[in-house]
Length: 104
Image (cartoon, rainbow, N blue to C red; front, side):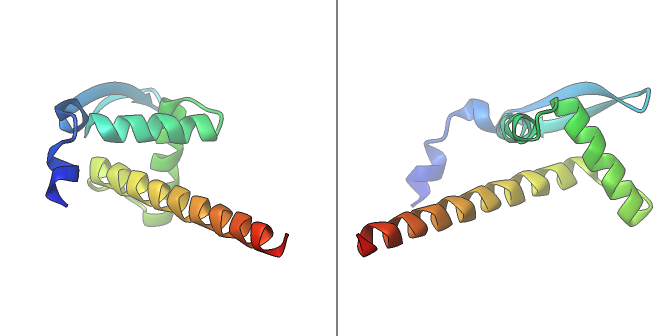
């Protein structure tokens, strides 16, 4: 099992900081490249930019919690939850397709 993980492209777990504006204030967020890829995909699915997606997540977290602590970790968790949702949806589609094939 470990080969699956240790054979990952080192670029995926290299971290990279990006500067962006949150309501006019410039800030920097450092995440591993794999998380930036997932955030970009999430933004595409929402038909928005990565910066707008991150701003929306920040604002929703602020509205819900009243403060934003450890935002980079929050974004990582969002990415993992997004991937879990994608896998669950894909499994459900596969199950539905199997049922259709079985009935035919």
